[in-house]
Length: 234
Length: 242
Image (cartoon, rainbow over all chains, first blue to last red; front, side):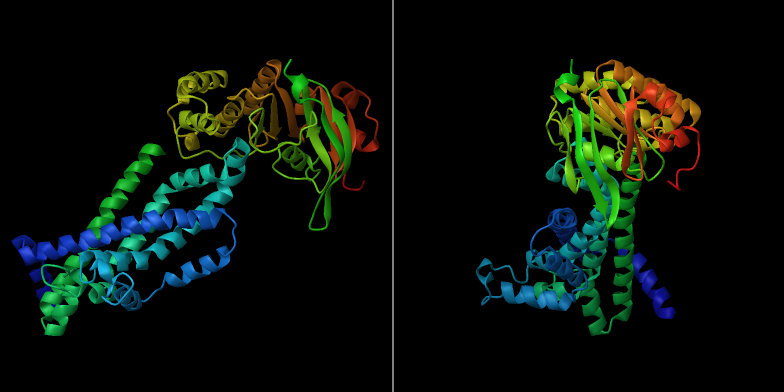
């Protein structure tokens, strides 16, 4: 209990102090995870919608793979991205290993399947409700997909932030491909892992509390905006 | 004038079965009248299925249904379908109508005047900015009809559009349907209400258990029904034993 109260005090103190290192770590964490969410959404939203609406060869296999990949272990994703980006790997010449870009790539691999699988279910449910009416009105398959994505936008934002939650909280993938380099690729989770291994439990706990507060703040802002938009349109 | 291009509506040996059950059984008739055609019958007669086939939403297993020798495909702008339970986009009344125009690539310059006309026609002008999903049942059904009518279709197919409305809502919708019919739009509508059929129909297709029992003018149907089934239905008797 004592550890927790001290950690909480330290967390508050770090925030009040506006500690430069902390701000750098928080900023990088947000940059990496939000960028990953945006890219994963650009892949996952149309992919999920297409899997829900269209019938094509290999669709069943793709759905099974997506559902499996929702629970991908971050260290395995980190390892695979590491091998691809390492000097001897197929994309080694890009020199991306141990950069924030590598961390974004790893997180996209982790959360794109989550966004796609959740989007597929959301669009499937919406299609049950809208399909006949839109078909009767003359909507073509491509128009149907765009309409359903727009109509389910509030649910899709929630899906995207399920992905954000996974990204901001994972440590294995970003540690392997980012390397936890100070002032370069250190994010909240890798910093917590480092401080724990150093034995500075108090600082690690304080960072953990800040991470939870950060995640809560981002999610609250987005959900607040979602709620306000819903009230305006409904 | 418009009817010449869409009529006759011909059912030829039309049959549908699902999971081994015969839902429409060898229907043969021709609808040539320009007035309102009512498809009448008890629940489970196959009325809605027949209407859906007429819009291309379902396909027959045998035979054919053709509008002036054309097999219907869903989304043809000369025909519109009004569902019993409308589904609206999570948008305003105005935006729901605009959506139909955009689907049919109507230019922006014409959009506003068409939408205003449809809203005026259905008495929804005051509600243009309201969310479609917050309208009352009667208002939703008027919007449903406005959405179908906005492209001035030659044919409107209505599937029990008043089934969930109170008497004043029913009266409003029936007035709207009559007004649309008078503007040279062919109306084909399903109902199980004898009163509604009497008020609206110029000819009646009477269905029972997937079979076409009678197709005749409304006057003849109600004054001199040919079959025992029709007589019993008009008399309000149960038809299950036939």
